[in-house]
Image (cartoon, rainbow, N blue to C red; front, side, top):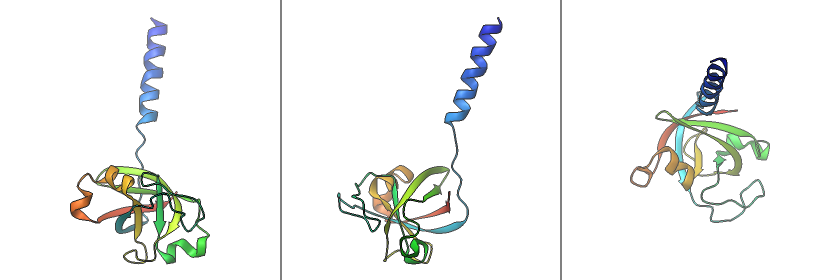
Amino acid sequence: MLIVKSVAALLAAATMASAVVISARDFTAIATYYDPNGGFGACGNPLGNGDLVVALSPSQYASGTRCGQRINVSYNGKGVSLVVADLCPGCQGANGIDLTEGVMALLEPNYIALGKITVDWAFA
């Protein structure tokens, strides 16, 4: 009986650990999307259309000092942790971000029709 309770407790703990919710609240901004198609991002690495990366506006990119830093992005109860890998000179507003198309699809299945979404994000 003790073994059954221990196994149940371990399973419950493992389930709770896998259900981590990423919350982001420092900035509310417009998120757009792009396809890097294997090209090099401003941080110097090749980027794929499904990579979990983000391009920041010039003010947030801070001349590349944010390269490699993580940000958490949330939208309609969904969240994702991304790595800063590119610069977005055309981002909307000082806190606007550009997501790879794969990330945008994760957050909003209707992304093509919408073109952009309003997200919350924060540096991790």
